[in-house]
Length: 157
Ligand SMILES: CC(C)(COP(=O)(O)OP(=O)(O)OC[C@H]1O[C@@H](n2cnc3c(N)ncnc32)[C@H](O)[C@@H]1OP(=O)(O)O)[C@@H](O)C(=O)NCCC(=O)NCCS
Image 1 (tube, protein in one colour):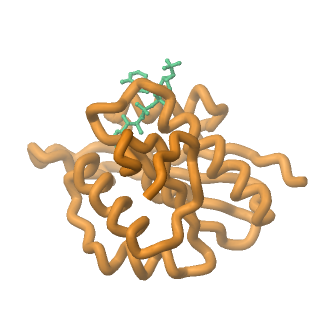
Image 2 (cartoon, protein in one colour):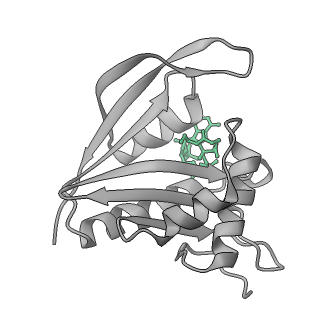
């Protein structure tokens, strides 16, 4: 694997494993490698990897779905050791461009009201809140947290 700092589109089996590995270091909710493989194989979905280390292993990923005129951000994760270096922002820019190229006119996402880093990132990119899901997420301690639904209109073309 070649070192690549800039986001690149994920496709291979090794890319599914990289996504799975980064996901596992970012999220508490369990995910199966096989699910990542299947999702990556769907033509409605796309993912980018980025922020590779010197050995060429990516440290960040984004996973999105496009359905008709809408795209949805499913996951975004950056390994804890390389956060606050612009990795997530670069992946978001790449994903927004890809969603535009696929004809999406908006990107939607759900984020926990308690996730301040992600909320700040999405606000910086221009996402606006359009709704809430009451007590949608459960934290490790069992507390239930609202999800904020956010939307970014996309410029097509
Ligand atoms: C949220 C997350 C993806 C941000 O990744 P990152 O690579 O550290 O973010 P970036 O360095 O690209 O930051 C871009 C902007 O986001 C905001 N931001 C990111 N981390 C922040 C933090 N800890 N506190 C406040 N703002 C933050 C800032 O506006 C930042 O711009 P700035 O550095 O110019 O101030 C990362 O913290 C993460 O993986 N968290 C766990 C998984 C998660 O919550 N995913 C999102 C929900 S699906």
